[in-house]
Length: 112
Length: 117
Image (cartoon, rainbow over all chains, first blue to last red; front, side, top):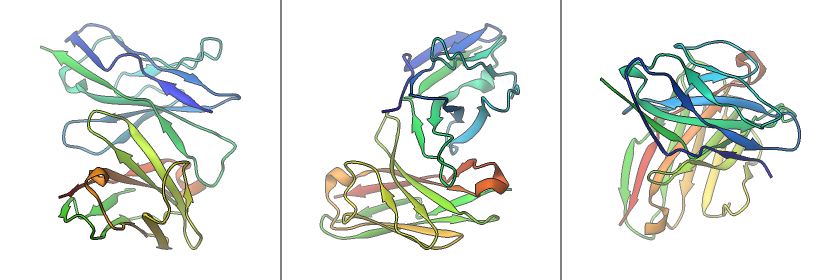
């Protein structure tokens, strides 16, 4: 069974500090991995997906198959980055409907 | 683009009654819609996947007779919680996927807060 683990429920950093939100997964195969973000009073939205290999809002995430991790990183956190972050996994073999398995989320607070 | 709406945003119903939640894709055709449930301070749990014109596929442990899902058109899916009980109180979120044309990305609705008294 596939599972996504985010070990930190809460993470607090100061503005300008580096931030890393951890995500580990268990999956037998090559999954597709995502980071979703939910700002206060807003809906869940996609932040980035590993196949795109792009940086969004200064965030990057690298898939490490050896460690089965997909940690989200930003070198200099901003106050507007404060939000709930969810790591998610889907099976790329499911073409019609990419069912997502979510981690429990990490609440990031960036202090001034 | 790719906006998903849900209605109502919050609903209170009495125990034993049924309540319907609508999920609409406003500017794209959703080949697949998903229904999630989220308990306070917990993650999203997938309840079911529905494809337009076919029966929904429910996740293990989700009662299909209690959570009726209808995906009658490419822009509308409904979730009906039948004979609701207080333990059904939760935040229900839908998402919609436009399939290959939108890179299979899921676009999420704002959620519906259900309270059963």
